[in-house]
Length: 288
Image (cartoon, rainbow, N blue to C red; front, side, top):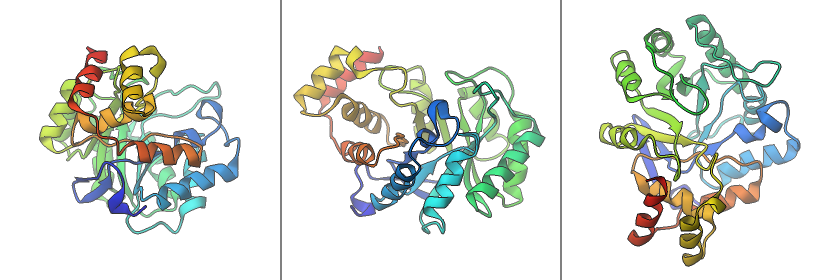
């Protein structure tokens, strides 16, 4: 499949043109996003399959594993294709119990940026997202000190663009007084719609919105409406839920993750599904 044929089209964020369907590398690590993958060769294969399918952006973080996904990406794809864009995150670390404690002092953020550069084998990172809140929702408070630290690294040429993860509209506005923001990555899916207003705000401002865990915490079987629409369209509930996200807003970029090449192909093909208006109306009611 050629890049221009990829379902969902492409979206331009600043000077980067991205396929609206990307690949989230988190699931390449072991159980609980900890340790090496169960099948190393399959992890390498799925990354290479993503490139073959025309996907041109991969979402990762050095704290996945930790270090595992970045090392796999480098092994599988370096030297990188000219049009491949790797998006990473900083602001957390992994503890021995598998937790995700904050690591957001300026010194910690600088160290994480250099860790990402080293393990990915890059001179500069295309996009670095500052992870601010918890796993499920933003946490109140200023993010100026943290974002300023990343903005300094951007001025030094180590980062090309900055983004935010798990933030509120107020934190986005604060960050924008410091440096441009090209993307927001928050929890959002067909059932978890707390970010509806922020999706619309970022669309108006030309900022990419990237839902993480697009199906997380939500089993398609829990929704009769989703099941009904999927059956009517002769598609899987997951395919319909991903298609709904793409049709929700033009700035929506998907990063579904999988450790299976076959599942990756299904995600990409499913993203080309066009939902009719009556189906969209039914699905919108799920999160109402």
